[in-house]
Image: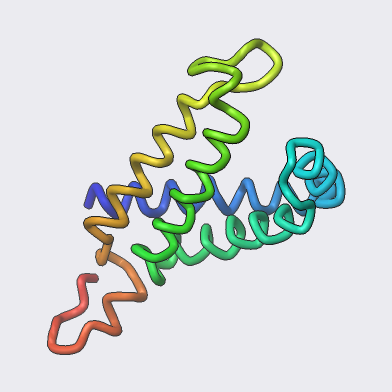
Length: 131
């Protein structure tokens, strides 16, 4: 049951972040990416992965793969941006404490999966569904 909670919460968080990037003006995010040395087109890729990946996690579709991809994005964000502002941030930007918690959730799901109330459970041959 704990993995279900982690999976759904991580999915909601990433879905929300993906939606926020598109609603807030993805062009602005692309410009910010360029200002920190990342190609602006990656903003579209990251936002799409967050949006689609969040939905996939909520539904329990490709949990391990999606979690691995999200953990990689979080690690890049942590080292490229957040590490410089410190663990708790600097007053203008949040630190990397939340990123570490999200990485921990994603890594847990990468190694353990989450089959309860998951679409993936319908594709397991020879196993009963975990509903």
